[in-house]
Each structure stands twice: as structure tokens, then as C-alpha cells.
Length: 145
Image (tube, rainbow, N blue to C red; front, side, top):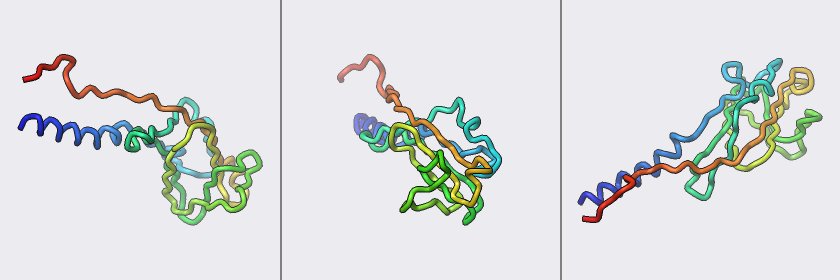
């Protein structure tokens, strides 16, 4: 009976621990996704990590872009020239969540006219590998009864 309870607790912890370890970044903090904001300064010192997908989406990290609905579009390429690639679908919900699922550099721009070029409304980040954190659920010494 005690072993069944122990395994139930382990199952609950396996579900809860990944969400506890997740980090949420609101891009631009209280300013959100807007013009005339230094997003590179905002990103400096922050570590963005990729999720460890093989273990039930453990350690998922994401960015939330907040902006007035219908006025701004965020795309992932064309950063240097402030041009969204043909065929990309802009984000238009006003509170969009982007899961950082792969390693490497990620580019985000605003698709509203002149917001990227003149208003510096663009962000580039580097997504790092997440090292698995071990959670000890059992004592270091155990006895079989």
C-alpha cells in the first residue's frame, strides 16, 4: 500500500516539476513589444534555453510578446533588413507565446510599417542548451522491507 502511494507521488511530481522549472520571459517587461525600446539591452544578461523534448516536454522556455492586438506582427527572419520572409505567418493575437524549441540564434521583427527600421522594434536572442537538473525523490540510502 505504501509503495502505491510512493509511486502516485512520483507520478504527480513528474507532472509538476517541469512546469515549476519553466522560465517565462515577457519581451520588453512592462513596456511589451513596442517602438523606441532597446530590446538588445533587455535581452542582455538573460539566458534563453531550449526545452529538453525527449522527456515529456521537460524544461520548456518561452517568450511572450505583448502588443496591441492587430497592430504589430512578429516574424522570425529578415532581422538585418527588417523584412519578413515571403510566406511567413505573422503573429497577430496581441499576447503571443513562442516556445523556444531549438538551439541557436532567433530573430524577431515587427512587421508594422517602419517599426523595425526606425523604431528599433526587433530582437535577436541565442537559445542555449538546457542541462538536465536532477531531482532526488528518494533518500540516498534505502532499505528493502
